[in-house]
Structure formats: C-alpha cells, structure tokens
Length: 576
Image (cartoon, rainbow, N blue to C red; front, top):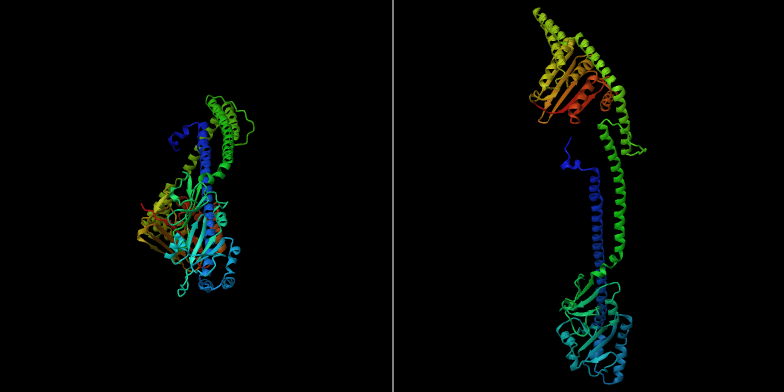
C-alpha cells in the first residue's frame, strides 16, 4: 500500500471536508466572482469604447460630408464659364447688369435650400461695374488683409476657414488661365446649426474636438473650454485623470491636411451601466456563495457524524463489545456500511460463541483426511518408475542391435522427461526444437515414407526464449489431424525467423485442412475464452500466450479443405 502523501491520510475527516470546502467552494466562488466582475468591467469598457469610436467616426464622416458638399458646389462654380462671363463683363447700365444677373446667377441661389449643410454663398470680385448686392461683395483693400485671402493666394485648392463659429469653404475661380482680367472668389458658409447637431451627437457621452494642423481647437462641444474667442491648444486644456482618449480620426483632404477629430470620455461615463448592475452582481455572488455553503455543511455533517459513530463502535469491538449501531434504513454507502457492520458484529458474536471452536476442529480433521488421500494417490504411480522402465527397454534394444527401436524409445523418454519438468515455464527455441524433432521422429517411425518434414531456422533464433511447449502442439496437430487424413505423401515445413524485436514461427502442412466454418469456430472460441472442450492443444497454447504476452503477440491460422493448414505465431524476442 502506498504511504499517505505528506501525512494527508492522518488528517481527520472533518478537517478534510473543511479543506475541501475552502479550496473547492470558497476560493473558486470568490475567484470566479472577482474574475467575472473584472471581465465584465473590461467588456463594458471595450464595448463602450468601440461604440463611442463608431460614433466618433460618424461625427467625422458627417463633418467631412458637409465640407465635401461645399467643396462640390465650389467645384461646380470653378468650371462653369457662365460665372466667368458674368463677373468679367463690363456693364454700362444697371439694367444690363440685372438682366445678366437673372440669366447667370439665378440658379446658384437654389443651393441653399437644397443643401441643409449650406448657410449661404457669397461671391467676391474686383469688377467695379457690378452691383454689390444679392450675394456679391467687392474685393477691397480690407478684404485683401484677411488671413484667408492671403492663404488663398498661396495655394491652388479650396481652403476651410472658421470665423466666429462659422466655417466657410473659400475658393478662387481661376480655372481658365486665359481669363485673368478680374479676381473672382466664392465663399460657401456651412450651416452652424447643422455643425452643432453633428458635434453634439446625443449618443456620444464625451467631448469632441476638431483640431487644426497646429493642434488648436477649431470646434468642440465642450462648453467648459472657451474655444470660441481664442484658439486654444488641445494639450493645454484641463483633462480629468480618468479621461480616456479615443483613436484620433484624421481628415483626408489636402485642404484639411493634418486636421483631426479627437474624442475624450470619462471612465465614469463608461462604467455607469456597471454601477447600476453592481447590486445585482453582489446579490448573485452572495447567492452563489450561500447555497453551496449550506449544502456542503449539511452533507459534510451527515458524513462526519455517521462515520464517527461507526468508528466509535469499531473501537468498542476491539474490546469484544459487539454492540450494534442504531440503523434508520439509510440507503447511501454509509447507511449500507452501518447495516453491514451490524450484520458483521452479530455474525462474529455468533461465530465466537457457538460455531468457532467446533468449526476449527472439523476443518482440522478434513485437512488431515485430504492429506492422507493425496499421499495414497501419489504412491500409486511414480513417474520416475515409468521413465526408468523406458530407459531399461532402450538399453536392452541397443544390446540387441535394434537401434531404430532404441532411438524411438529415447525420443519418447525425452518427451516424457519434459512432461516431468512442466514447472519450467520458459525454454529456448533450441530446446523446443529438440522436443519437436523427437516427436517427428516418432511419427516418422509410425508413418514411414508417408511423412517428410523440413526446418528453416535462423541462427539468431536458437537462443531466443519462448514459453515451454508453445510450438509442439501445432506440430502434433499438423501430423495427427493433417497428414494422417490424406493418402498421399505428407510434408511438414517449419520456419522460424528472428529479428531484434520479434520471433516468427510458421508451420505449414499439405494435409486435409479444414472448412472455413470450422476455422471460424476455432478462432471465435479463442476470442470468447470458452472452456477447453475440443482443440485443447490450441487453446492451451493461446491462453498461455495471453498470460505471458497480454496483447503483444499475433496468432493466425489459415486453412481450407484439401489445401493444408498454415499457422503463424509472432512473439516478442527475448534472450537469456
């Protein structure tokens, strides 16, 4: 019996149950709930951040869409020759200007009601003959001092400017380079209400900042930052320690180069749902803790109390006090143990008081009687007497020059001597072959020229160990059941091959063979481990091979009527 691990078997059952409760219930429940709580926090945080990131992408996309609408309108003006014709014409009279205005400019006013993101469109020109009204303004010296005018002169693409919370797309109409008589600029103002709706998305629970290429705040929904009056660096604004920065969204166009939309959110906003569910989680954890605890306490008490009671009565039994335990008909293992203990106590008491001494005397008499019978049986036949008698006959035959008879008697003596040493479990292949040769010589003496046999043995096989008489029964079957049943000359071929790991025994005869049904019956009886009955030799060998090699051997029989029989046995190679 293996010793107890670090004295664990010396711990009382109650303490073992407490240890089991701590490590199998208390600690797992605490760890499970802590892990569940932390995983829930992480999942909610990740989900919230993902949701807010999607909202931030939506805000960015809507802002870019609004700007793109203005850019698209400016592109329509940029390539429309009618506007160039209108603004570069030198008008002599007001009537002429108004007529051309109705012809060329009446359609552009449709853009404002068509696009909600557009607040208005203004054209700037230095043509003195136009009337500066109806969305047309002059390019004056003051105009040329504007920052956007200077920036526009340095680039060849539209620019986005922010003036008093109103974003505008401004573009110079200079597509046709051969028509540079007049300066023409179009300013498309974005609807500030629409922008406010974009950046104050109700599904975004944090703050959104539109930053220019200098990381200055151009627009934000954070009312605590005074970005309207002066440009403020984003890095300079005050942020809480629990602020989470979402992934920055770069604006793609060259006129918005290095502009980005940045979102921030407080962890308190993200964990708000979790805080609402905290009481539920705590309640659920308490239930998970309380009910298993009560159940285990009840079960452990049931086990400990009843086992301790059995132990007390067993200690009393040591003092020959065979008092039984009160049994209430419990059907579990401890209840059955209690019931069996009571039966055992009553039985022992009965045996000691009534039967024990008488039975001991009776068994002693029976044992002596059996020993006497065995001695008488052994004295009837002495195997050594038979062996000595055969040896005497062999010597007398040699004295009379009957060498063939003497040799056969010698072979029979060898076989008989082997039967006297049946307790020798393992023999070499050489020893087994000597026994086989003795048997075949006897059979050849019987059959004469009708029987021929041949051997094909690897030199390496002679010293291999095999179970005693593992091959001989099959040689006997080949001779008796195979060769005797045919009239023509019989041949038995025995082949033993040996490798480093395996030894293969093959015996083949040209006898009468057997039908497929009979072969199937033999193999089925071997698999089902039936009683000996018929085919004793085959079953004896097969069951002994199972005993020695378990499943690490191969056994196969091939046979058909009129074509002889082939037996193959493959064993693990063993040497002395």
